[in-house]
Image (cartoon, rainbow, N blue to C red):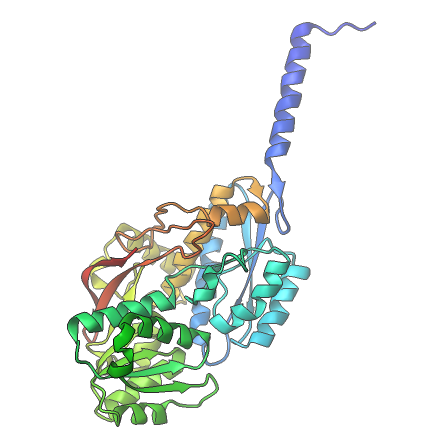
Length: 402
């Protein structure tokens, strides 16, 4: 009978146990191998909201940079980014392909309220992480009915409430006119705004107009709002319609104190097409660093951003906050994937995303951190307010919110 020395047996047992532990530590979901993690998303690369397609391009470039440095925990990130033209039926088609044919680990950073609502039920039924949706709709916080869907930025309702509270504190006798897109995006902003005004909403709001995504212009809506005699305006508009609204207000000589949703506040993508001078004095709020904020441009995270943009996406517009947003959300996804380690199951991805505790993403504005829980799916609930001086957004007041 062959006798194996006790020391050798002990060493063999140790190696076997170590190997078993190593194998046990690696838990993979769809789209994951020892060398690669596959994510999917949809973007409006075409259509009226194509300006927001820069977000996807920035995210692709960010992961390209990470891959050149070895990826995340030794795995390269493959992001499949598909065009949906901001058309919900096309979003459904593309997302089904990403899940059923490409077998992605998660859907990440897709842009649009209506488009993401269109695929939310499908993704939750299949238990696919639907993370960091690009839109502040309150529905992204419905953890009870849609536990696999989570937004990123602060909710539109919360932001709308913030503007209303600022008006009550600084313009208590304001006559308010509202322009909003007739979809979930616009309705969320208006609900939050009216909730913020409370009992005074019915007396302070003197006119409301909506527009459809397919409308060629919003000229008639702006003219109608001006005739109301409003001295204060709240505008929840997107893309070219936002630019049109700002320009038309200026052209017809209507100069109300104007509050605009952050998605319609990019100087490069939206204000510049309207003419920067037309939006002087506008107010918005945001939660992240941006090249559009002069006071923050020398921040170390901003310097890293400029260096990244120059090297990894030189054809992009590094001065556009829309582009910067993509870089910022890619950092959030990087945090989740790094924290997951070798447990890259869909369940663990959601566990990490729903248990963020004062996470400091480099591109968040000073004093603002990401916080979530299994019953709080809004990572960002703090804002800094800004005033546009005709060239730049200037911060004023303290960080507000939770």
